[in-house]
Length: 488
Image 1 (spheres, rainbow, N blue to C red):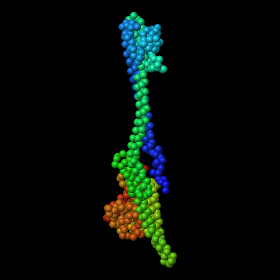
Image 2: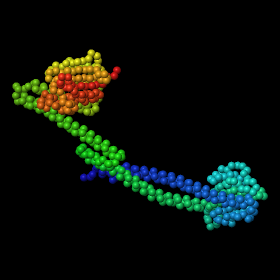
Image 3: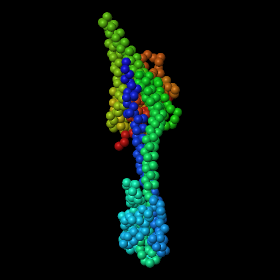
Image 4: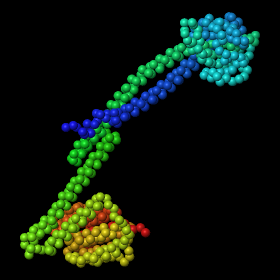
């Protein structure tokens, strides 16, 4: 047989799992962060290297400009002979006055620093301020201008090599003005950038693999208890509600999920057990009148002259009461809310007691003259009164008393008392349990089905009230129902 359970689909759907999505998302986020950080690092590194090359070029230009300012002839200037630092001195007429070996017959390196001098700062190649900043005789300009250009200093190089050029104006003591152009090779910057970029490109995939693997393993470890919970719930679905999911010892979200799941299973088990017990008790209660009816009908069929209509009617009435009680309890369990209306509790008690007949004992009523308004379902509240009076009639010795009173706390109280044996304190909660009868010595026909007080409690709670059991004055039991007073 092919396994079609939840675990059978897991291998084919690994890419859609939380673990896979988490790993993919974290790897993607780390990749984007590393790319952005790498781009920022490369940009900062390039700027620093270019500025460093510009500083070297400015130092070389200022050394030559200082020689010009002190009157050194142009043909005797001490120029650097390093290929990586070319220097060229250009006059105001754009004639090369002095240059290194490779630039002696070359045209001017650039014209961005020609007089009138325009100040410049690194990376501000095209943004110059107009003005005559020509230095005084025997001095050099305070600021240099910069530009990056490609120079071909050797024939063996097919392409020009990038240089950072610094231009600086200088004035000789005789008043002649010249522009000193000094360059610094950016080949080191290019090699450094290339090396860093290659290292990043090599290290990025390896780092992403590590991030993905760590995320996969960590997520797998974190979700392992969840998989255990899921597997246990799949087993519990077969019907064994006594089982519980494994609960991790940690205090994280998974542990709280396990605790909540176990609490839910416990509540579900209790509810199912209560439902099973309710069905079993209801079936047991219905068997007696049904069996009695069947027996009497079979006897009547065999001996028509022995037919007892009173017994048949009594059993039928009992069946009807049990069925009606079960239906009401089912509605209450389903959360059905009563259709409330404003009514006078004292008037309701007066009307219901006036319609009662066939009671074993007389009922004494103590009702106030003024109204006692409550917001409740008239039908259900009448059912509460009827069940309490029926219970009192079964246990009373000689009298049953019903009283209604208005309390100072904004509530209305209904008391039903009898002079019977009362309810022991230990059993004052059990009497409201379904199918519970404390008078086990009596027959079922006399004692009822044990649903009346359970219905009373559920209906009272649905109306926002409470019910209590106490001792009556002079002995017996007192059942007190307290309901909120209806607002005007």
